[in-house]
Amino acid sequence: EQLPPHVMVLFGATGDLAARKLFPGFYHLAAAGRMPSDYRVIGSGRHSPGDDEEFRQQVREGLEDTVDDLDEQVAADLLERISFQTSDSDDGSELADRVREAEEQLGDDVRRLVYLSVPPAAMQDMVAMLGREQLTERARLVLEKPFGLDLESARSLDAALKDVVDEDQVFRIDHFLGKEAVQNILALRFANGLFEPAWDSRSIASVQIDVPEDLGMEGRGSFYESTGCLRDMISTHLCQLLGFVALEDPGSFEEGAVRDAKHAVFEAMRPLDPERVVFGQYDGYRDEDDVDADSEVETFVAIEAFVDNDRWRDVPFYLRTGKRLARSDRVITLRFRGSDCTLFDDEPTRRPPNDLVIELTDDPKVHVELRAKKPGPDMDLVEAVMHLDVGDAAPEATPLEAYERLLLDVMRGDQTLFTRADEVDRLWQVCEPVLQSPPQVQSYAPGSWGPEAALEMPTGGWQLRG
Ligand code: BG6
Image (cartoon, rainbow, N blue to C red):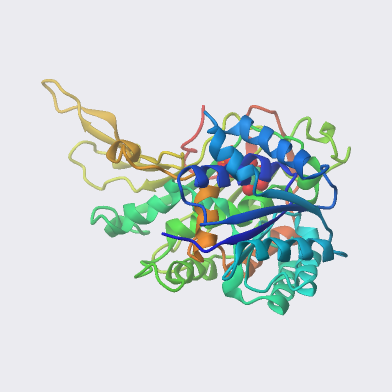
């Protein structure tokens, strides 16, 4: 697969995401021979990190921190293609000049990739600036989430985008969709005859989408103050996971079929009921850098959601995520209804349910909690676990980290794993009641599983606990 030459512009190039994910992503793609035939990366932002050499040094340090066994040659080749140009939403003229210079060096048929890793409040003005400077021509625009801060601002951002680009140029990135394990949900469901017939309300009692994090603010206090956990994680990552779990057979991977199927799920989602939402804030959050001493911003959210269609009617979806929790994990649990069969028990409801647990680790793992006969002379049961480790099935395969996969997809022009405007719009509609009347934020101890109220939700017990 030969990609055309690219000039990539990276807004937010001195930020945390660029250092932890984007530059390492370019490095790994380069090491795997997956970068375009020729390319330049122009970092940009309001504040200069110094001259090009100093910027390269900063990127290099980031690579050293994140890449094991850095290959000097690959790193040197990447670094030599990197430069920096300050810009802001008022003035991008020097940046536009730099882009054109770089394009001249690369010959004809050069593509532009413009990555906007900027806070939601700054996004719209940046988009307008790109339009004014004609940087949108031949460009694919990658936008970091959240896309707006509510329905109104998302619509206004969308209108600004439509003024300067077509939807097929817009790549709204939600990196959870780049995770191998998330795409594996489609394979599990649709490439096996085993699960799909049971993938509905007749067999499934509830679904949990659980992404606790032990990390705190990590220097992102001011981002969190303007965003909060609902927008940072729920309306984006966790709802997208819900879309993948709940969608109908998309029929193909062509022409937006997966996105159509996901959009249909969001259309059927019931707007959230603030009474079924728990907001939490960890003790000590208000002492974090750049956080207001009286902040009411939520660092934890648990919700009960419903998808009102034939497949999922009355099946609760419990979504939970938060900072400074007991541990970091990412797990989707499909909890199957107990069996009606009385062969082993007069009271079937006493038997624990079967859980199908999809672990969203880099190396996808799935397990099923079930019962088997306990070896021995009597017909007793034992609780057992059936494990699938996808890595063991394909030891020679080279998984891509989420951002690597998605950067590659942008360069290929494949939008399947990106979020479409209509999905974003609908998810803001779903979240709107909570944004309008947010529940009272409840405090929780760092290292716990969040506020008591979330543990008391009628989940039948969170799969992750203890
Ligand atoms: C980011 C959020 O999008 O995802 C962070 O802004 C969060 O708050 C992160 O920690 C989690 O991603 P991952 O891939 O590290 O689980």
